[in-house]
Length: 175
Image 1: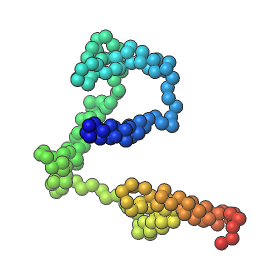
Image 2: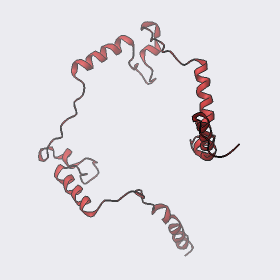
Image 3: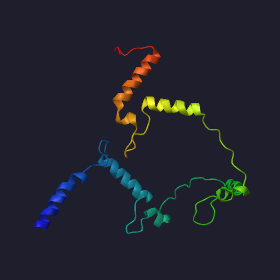
Image 4: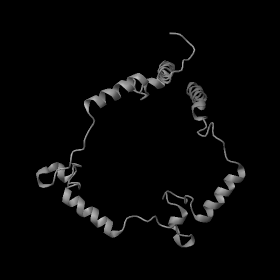
């Protein structure tokens, strides 16, 4: 009896967690729209076949359905040209399980890549000052939010004041 009561209590307490509708806040489809989608899927074979295969009906019985037009990719010549370029530059995965590229393992055998121009120290300092000013910095914690998302009133008010000062307008308050 005690086990049965415990299971009932657990089931009732967990029910609200599973009752959340994923489409909450979005407009749901009408019955006619769902029926139209189902009939289209049945006609095209774009519906899962029974069993544990995990394939669509059109994949299992391709003769009974129209084939989808394949997406055009690269030509054979384009692929060969890319392969030749990768072989010349060593930009190919090395054999084995390292996941390294050939030009990383033996850089002396391949031409070095041109270094791209980075930002100057002054540019980085300006970007940091702007990020601090607008709160566009990651806050501490595990949620991955920025400071201006956690404290919108502080950064919005500060940003609005600085915008008004730059535009020559006042927000009506004297500081």
